[in-house]
Image 1: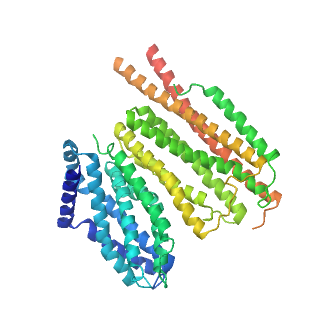
Image 2: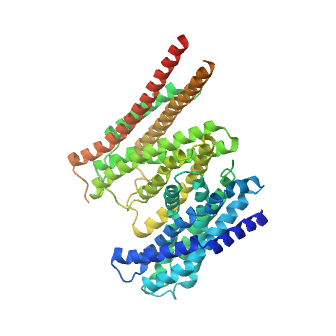
Image 3: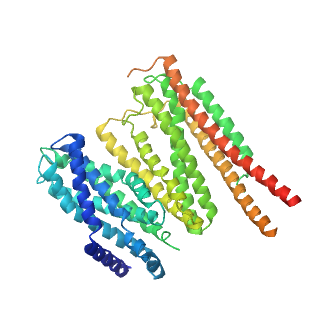
Length: 224
Length: 228
Length: 51
């Protein structure tokens, strides 16, 4: 199973590296949204809860783009039938897609978080960094698991571009709550983590539940 | 046979609900802080609990469907989820009425249960577009079941998350939805909850019967056309 | 906000219960039309069969 997952993952990463379709678009999207928030909120700098909220909402909206495109390669070249004919364990497919999304999100955040610090964040990132990385890691894991599931659910429907955001965003609300609440004290003028354990705990619970659920039901998707 | 035992169930529902309403207006005492407005709770909260239960039941039925491949479980799951969405509309509307009567605004973010319910409701609303955008009936059933299971797992998670967040920023305003109700109120609430549950099951059976009859009829028509 | 006086509160409470009853009645009406359609189709089938 691991070998199959690694093979699919390598293929997806290679395609993304060559075509550069998802990650640059997602990254550009985040920066554009920062600019929109600047105008929409009429603020030059943000701190505390507003900063945490803007950062996480932006990242999650960018994730929607990535999720929509997760099975795009298979769809466009008719690869889904190929994958299904081969004796590929569905779990391997899920792991590969979730891992790909996780890597894409990390890549996007490598630019999006410093960009956020540059454009909108009042207090600097230095006080926040190690804890922020932990939050980002657990958050990305949750988005990856849920995103892979939603992408597969919407893969065969006609109204894919509509269904993905409508499905993904409510499902991400608990994750958004945990990430924003955990990040908020890190973005205060006097930064320092507060109640981090509680929110990381919630994030971990969320991740565990959705990885388990997705692995359990993935077998019934994309099966013909 | 979906209509088995329907008559006694429907009668039980009618009796229980009527008793519940009578209790609400003639037996339950007036709340000290909220006054008469508190009576909304006897309809708002049971609806919410039953709607959430219905959604989770829909998830369980979906598991049965995927496990056994029997499409009738998917139909049961669909009707349960569909009914809960309708009840959900009622929950949000009665919740808004309560909010307006208590706070002067049609919506408040202070009540974590109501806020959490809104998120879950928004999620389940996507069930329809998801389901009906898939044409192949077998695939439609399968994907709907996957959704029902994922969404069912989501319900408790979301509650926990919203509860944690709101208790952080807003102190708990409402202790009514908790367990510390005085005796007469508790009895009234339980009867109302029972009545709402019976109502759900009755309507669920009713819709399933109608759906099933309609499906059988289609089969008959096809058979008649072929024979002709 | 202090508790509303009885007559004002009454309107809100009545509104909530009316919403509940209305929901059920609308639902029953929809199921009723479904059943009416089923009945119509059955009678059509029967008349086709009689021919």
